[in-house]
Structure formats: structure tokens, C-alpha cells
Length: 158
Image (cartoon, rainbow, N blue to C red; front, side, top):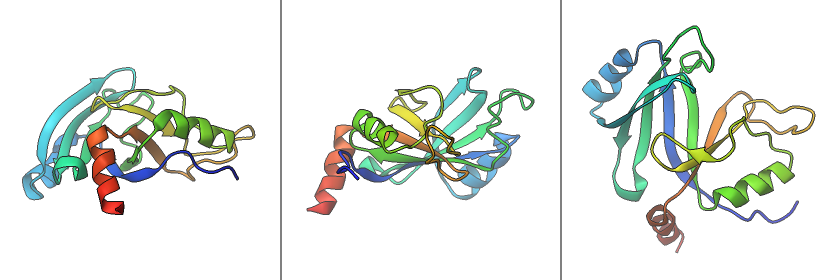
């Protein structure tokens, strides 16, 4: 196997789906004290999400509370309560190129801007004949880390 030309730095986010994000807010915001930092709505992605946060600075972890715009449409962001896990990566384009060459399957859409403004892409939950390595039922989002996050994680390794 070729040497990996990128590094996974840490958890960038977790995304939790439900039919009604207000019920999710009751737990995560009202009970656990996370702050709401934004909202993202996309009819194309069938999602209405509140972006919350825990921690601070480069070690802040985003917690996205999601409900579908239309519960009868796909993607069904509420069908799996733990919708996806987002991982910071230091070089997203190189990661995608290398992982695809190793047989990792990506979800449609390629690299694009995510809800929080970072470049993102998703590893598909299931492999197929062409790309046999999938995430075994878990949707994984790779998120391009900004320089301050890369530098903060580098200081931990020093």
C-alpha cells in the first residue's frame, strides 16, 4: 500500500437526525448546554439543520441537529439517528485521490462547500464492485481543516 499523503486530525462534527429537530434541541441545547452557532437549509440535500458546538478554538466539535425538509424524500437525514461523523483532514484533495486509488467509495457530489463553510466530501456507507471499500453502514464526512486546526493538532504531536 502506498504511503498515505494526508492525516486525519480529529473529529470535526457529529450529525444527529430526527423527524423534529426541536426534540434534539431540547436535549443538546437546553439540557446539555451546547450553543447554536448557525442554521443550514438545503432542499437539494433535504436537510434543515441547526449547527451547535461544544468546546472551543481549534478543538471545537460541531454537533449538527438535523431534520428533513420533506420526510418523504431522500436523503432521509432522520432515518439513521446518528447520521454521520465528520473528520478533520489536513489535505482533502490528496485524501480523496489516494483513498479512491485504494478502492474507497465516495458518495456522489465530490468535494464541495459544506454547511459550516469548509470543503467536504462523503465516504459512502457501502462499497460496490468498482470501489469495494465502504464505511460499513456509517456515512463519514471528510472536512478540510483550516490552517489553525492543522497547526493546533501539530502542536499536540510535537
